[in-house]
Image (cartoon, rainbow, N blue to C red; front, side):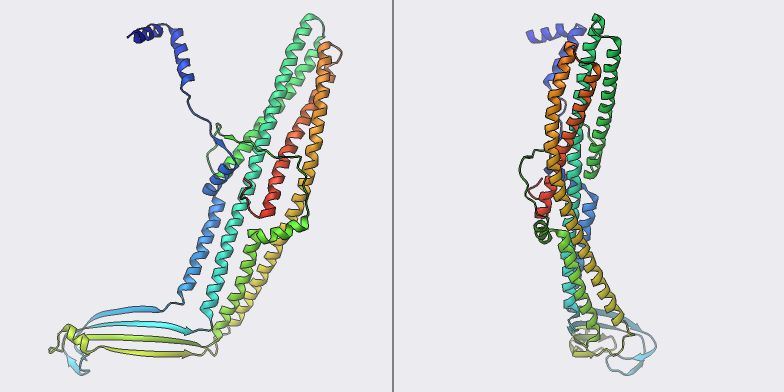
Length: 451
């Protein structure tokens, strides 16, 4: 009871109501920020990316075509049931005599047919579509890897642009501190008004750089959200990456290509597709070979003109069957087989050229990433040393400015050099992180264990 009375007295005063409301807001958090890492982004990409989904649908289509080709080696079975009514002069189905009356008849039958030999056409088609199915699965994996590569690049770009934006914010904060300090010196008569104008100009430049960095950060986030196919969320944060940039990298493009050639799905997909055309040629040539078909038929009928036997008795009395074996020898098929074979052979050469082109692009990509990793590692080391040296130089100039022994121009120049060096170090660091991950991707042919 005492608690409610105290609460009532508190709520009677406006200021105390605001304080109580603020306390409640601090005690009960509104929402938690979502933090995404590379693994979570990869899961969202696989779930939502439409390009990857299209690759999956193509793989499912190829698998359905393979199952359809396999079904061609199964026999066909059918049941036929018919009911008819005869008017006027006709032939009695039961006695085969001419009659002139109204009567009805029924027929039931079944037929089984199987292709015994067709020049191995069906078997070659099954092998062809099996290779196409496996090629489509590898192509789907290749599309997944390509989209993950774009995602990793966009993710690293978000982290790099965020670091550049935070660095620009720090530059603005430092310039504001110097503006306040110089304003006090101007009021005290220690520094002239020109110095204040120069330091304010430096603040304006830093503010412009901060706005530019913020826009770049927002654009990088939007690119990543669009790649993941999710609505942009300003509260979403991305987990930072870490790498031991001082690790020595021993690289040999030739050995790396030999290893990647065996593991890369785009190479396996092109090779399987090339092999499939060989079976296509064989299946087309099979049209020139003789084919052997076997069939079995069974039937029975009923006619209303036979009054002596009922329906099922007539079906039992008229049952009949047959077995047949047919041989077809093609002599001339309008000269269609040879052009089809030539077209399939051209398609095989095109597939071989696509395979060679995929190998060439892979080799060029490996050579490029080897060079990029080496160069980015050197840039990282140089940028880090540059940033450390300019930090010491800036600290010296800032101390001299506070002591009145350095000019505003010297300070602005030193600060601009430091900002440029810090930006270079940030770019070089994230560039090296990204290149190391891409190199590992080329080494094993997938992103498993890298993200």
